[in-house]
Length: 66
Image 1 (cartoon, one colour):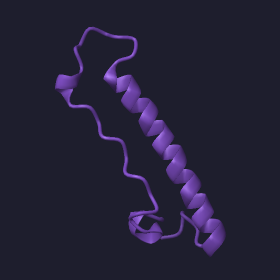
Image 2: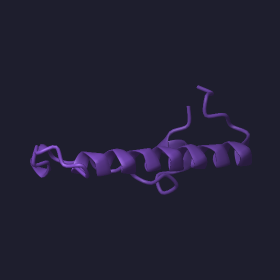
Image 3: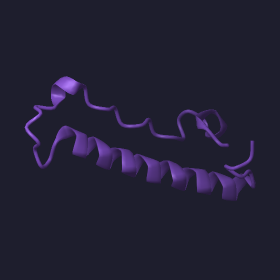
Image 4: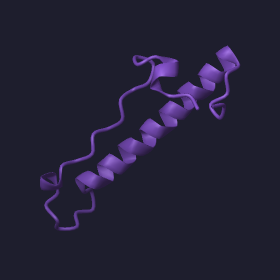
């Protein structure tokens, strides 16, 4: 599997930082900090998948290879 060291630390963006529990007011807000975090995490996962696919195309190394 391809990881940060295979692509190079600077090639993969860092994952979003999960909110600290104190950042949520606990009132069930429609746009809770955890909603923003989940959206950012999804975008990050999509970006990493794209970067891995591009890396595979350039190098011929599959991300499913051990």
